[in-house]
Image (cartoon, rainbow, N blue to C red):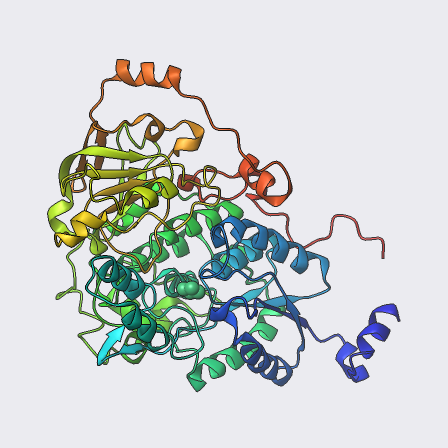
Length: 554
Ligand code: FES
């Protein structure tokens, strides 16, 4: 009686308690997460589907992570959201769940949670914004922020121009419409089999976004009665497919960290080097910013992810079964491409095989580092230069405008203290704007190295995720201004040209900084976060606990 009575306070008729599946709708809606601000409407569409199929839908709010507004960085809170959603799913009496996400970190956080609980789950991402338009050209969220800021810093764009570009870049609800992290992770969720086919790309403002949501509501009722749980969907084969698709779509480097973290929850063996080995034979097919020219609306109308996967079928595990219950081969059998400019044929790719995200090794990154080749300048992929080192991104920002800064076009800019533990939260600052004096000379790219991340919408020859990070004593902590560094992406090498004896001498003189975070979640994070090469999850959150409540007094 206690369970029914309190729910009756919401006005439900008694027949909802007739044993039908209870479907949770975990909603990351928030006005502080503009990319997810329309998800209440999406939840209504999911509910329609659940009622239609004979389930009992109950929507509940979760933590939300607004990439553009949260400080110091939304990534600091990805693991907190994953922990919160996990506990909500386990603690409440639900049989299955639909996850509503959108902005960058909300999608991986929810997938990590679902993986650890392992209830039947479908994800519905909120969809991208409509294409940005400004003065007759297409502009991409994020990508054009960096471009316009660089133009402004170089004196080629006025403050008024920047203000005029703002609204043209955000014309509707939805997440960033470049192939940034949100679009990438939506595509990863679909490739992993956790959301329905075509779900990743329908624009947020398109009625077919709501149709997809209603279909997800119908399907989750079937799943509630099956054992097709995340652990059976997100298999090693699914992750291999995700890595291959990420290479073909020119996806975000953040996908590397998020996929490693999700796999860590499931106990699926996935290593950083898998991203290099599996992606090397794969050409970039999708012509989207920041690697290419178009935007998510174009990608959707060109056929979306199924058209890409059909083109890639020779690389993929097509026997994989996702939440549809059908093999991938069946799902993509009739997928068509309607615009070969946007989704290129494998025989005529945007970029040749091996131009996706590369994993580097060497004495500067013993546990690895990554570089997104498709967003880099080809002439810098082999480069030797002298380091100009900054201990924090703030130090760099103070120095960058200095007209007397001792920096050349060939200099390698090194920023440290921006890793998972060092910042903390590993902010997206790896594609920092170039020094002003070089911008004014027309320089558009330089080699930059850091233990930070880069926004999926960013571009440039930037080496990211250097591990171990400087804050835990990785070799990055030992680099000094004037040291020679050589980057050889084709050979997958990043080398600090300093002898072992000298590095050992510097190590003796090095001491870790004391973290200023003495309490609360930030302290927990600093004490337990793993390195980027392991997915930057908290060490005690890896693995799964299942859906059963350890101790149930009722
Ligand atoms: Fe939310 Fe880009 S800021 S997806």
